[in-house]
Amino acid sequence: MDMEVRESFSLKKFNTFDIEVACKYFVECEREEELLEFVRSYELNPEEVLILGGGSNFLFTEDFDGVVFYPTMQGCEVVGEDGDDVYVRVGSGVVWDDFVAWAVEHGYGGVENLSLVPGHVGATPVQNIGAYGMEVGESIVSVEAVDIVKGEKVTIDAVTCRFSYRDSIFKHEWKNRFVVTYVTFRLSKRPVFRLHYGSVHDEVIRLGEISLKTIRQAITRIREAKLPDVKVLPNAGSFFKNPLVERAFADSLIEKYPSLPVYPVDEDHVKLAAGWLIEFAGWKGKVIGHAGVHEKQALVLVNTGGATGIEIAHLANEIKKSVFLQFGVWLEAEVNVI
Ligand code: EPU
Image (tube, rainbow, N blue to C red; front, side):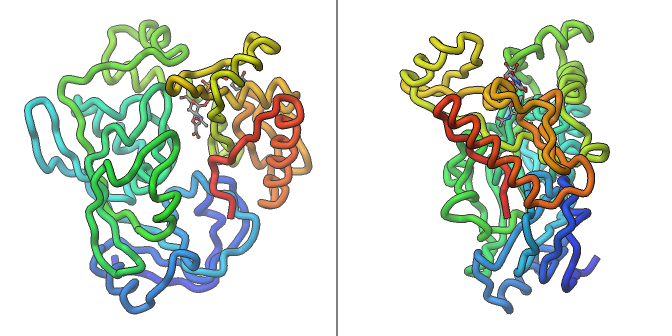
């Protein structure tokens, strides 16, 4: 398919919150060369640009007066092997969970705990998606992208991506500058299973022998039980990040709230379970207008039907204030608010 540029284009189908907004230009591209040609002729800067994958991590509060790039590169190809490792190059437009299914099917480990995470492959390094004790940054070898500023094709290695908890260089210095076209992953033919998070181990055992397939099944079940289906209740997964705080501060909170879940990060820092804080502050299941807090996972905000982005942003702000007043912790959005 040739590259398509559309004007005044509705993004309703391209954001999982199902918000009715439009962008000035929408550029869908499947071929790198065409994308390169486009960025060379328009000399855009990152402020005028937004790069959309599955749209599962955006909250639009108004129309976007710029260019939205929607890369749809396809393909999933083994490009090398090295001992027990295989290298797989995947198009940025591939649905993430289809890639996970492919990997599990082939017996390649490294992404199985990330089953059912929404979105496209190209967005995964930006966000460094993570779940159930695994982060995608651990498996990424390199990211191919088009630099919209220099009009060049680049290959960025994993170290340069600066992956950390739900974070990468693509959210900071390089925000909206690189349109990811392909991602190369290192997967293992002899996977080391990771079962330590929450109820993963018990759920796998219930399904039978421990394997990539049973892990994928178990995680699918756990997610489906807690996380709302975007087709039924539009949402963007966890709305907030789990806040990183100093260990001493966390200790003082635990004295007051002994059941507060805490995850170790390094010697001096821990993460707190934001979902717990929000639930404890009384928000779980609450609805303001058309925006709600999911009744099974307080970290997830939902569009109960016909919400505007502003309504959801307003609910998010009320939650932030209330959690701060109660616990002295500022929550930070994981979702990109536009
Ligand atoms: N909790 C509550 N109430 C809630 C939600 C959670 O008390 O309403 C408690 C749970 O009981 C548990 C702890 O908080 O003790 C953690 O809950 P959970 O295992 O559901 O994970 P989370 O920290 O809320 C994170 C990710 C999810 C990911 C899960 C599993 C972030 C921001 N979120 O959620 O990611 O699926 O862990 O690994 O890190 C996403 O990013 O969109 C997402 C869904």
